[in-house]
Amino acid sequence: MNFSLYIAKRYLRSKSSNNAINFITIIAVIGVILGSASLFIVLSGFSGLKDFTLQFSSIIDPDLKAETAVGKSFILTDDNISELNKLNDIAQYAKIIEERVIIESQDKNTIATIKGVDEHYENVVNFDTVIEHGTWIEQKSRQIVVGWGIANNLSLGIIDYTSPIKVYVPKPGKGQITSTKNAFNSINVMNVGVFFINEKLNDTYIFAPIDLAKNLLNYEPNQISAIEFKLKEGIDEALAKKHIQAILGDKVIVKNRAQLNDALYKMLNTENLAVYLIFTLVLIIAFFNVIGSLIMMMLDKKRSLNTLFNIGVTVRDIRRIFFYQGSLMGVVGGFIGLLISLIIVFLQKTFSLVMITPSLAYPVNIKIENLFIVFITISVLGIIASKIASVRITKPLVEEH
Image 1: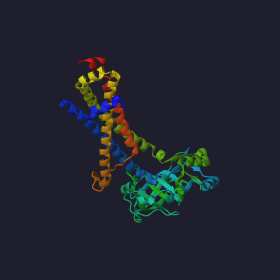
Image 2 (image 1 turned 90 degrees about the horizontal axis):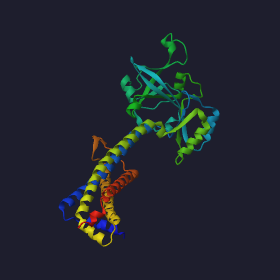
Image 3 (image 1 turned 120 degrees about the vertical axis):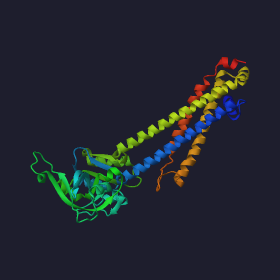
Image 4 (image 1 turned 90 degrees about the vertical axis):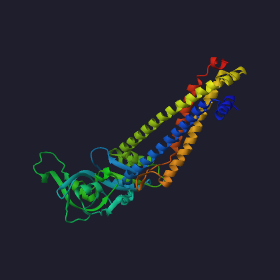
């Protein structure tokens, strides 16, 4: 066995004759344990919040989406459709038309985004799960489904014949507007359902049959804004993305779920990094106690160190003793802290100990990468702290009697 490591283990297990040094060492180890446990619990809590937030936006996000590269729409040719139908990567796809509109009812109006979808849309995303009231739209109709925020702002009911709903969109073209009638295309619609996803989507979207959207926007039969895809199980997303891009060409940009919500992902990842750095700073402060306890241990063991030096142990090997001791304090403390935090997170996940609301437990998620992040952070900080302390060992120190 390595001599320095053996002595380091002995020093770590044995008690000092000085109770103050024992107390400082215990405080240092407890600080490492609590620091590592806190870091993992916070990262697990943030992972839970991240997954909880993304699950709402991902409900209506397809596996892949081909959006127009230039302008607001593109032409989907018969050849494109034929090639997409032959592509084995795709389980289903839906043609989409999106545009900003004005929706009006009972002298109230708001700006929204109309999303015209075809009959395959329900097979691409699980939209039925977010319809709070009413039903889904029927194709070849003037039905719409609106977000909860729009329904609340405009006081929209479901299949309410007493309160007509009108959707407006500016007409394309140039020149001076002479009348409101010439400035807008409009269509009367009937609301048949209300969905609830999240605040942003609830206040933004109305869903309609694709033919209604085409008529409202004066689109050609093969003119659309996007195509949303559901991939078959086990299909490589990157490869499917490449195949779709090859079929549709440069007129579209194919995006996956993360790219469709890039702003949300960036915000959540930035917050995660900020939380990690803040708690790493707490750990750095905790490791100052480790440095202090090692230095106190060196002073307490001066006579023993002198004996080791006299029997031929080099100053370098003596430094390694305290380097190993500090590293072991960090690794062992971090391991114990991780075990404690795993138990706490598991209890929260299983028994909902902390609640956000009476019906909603604080979400947590145990991820392997968080375990590695915490353990590596503790190990690196422990090594750095041990190195800082061990360089205090000098030849004059161990030669003193």
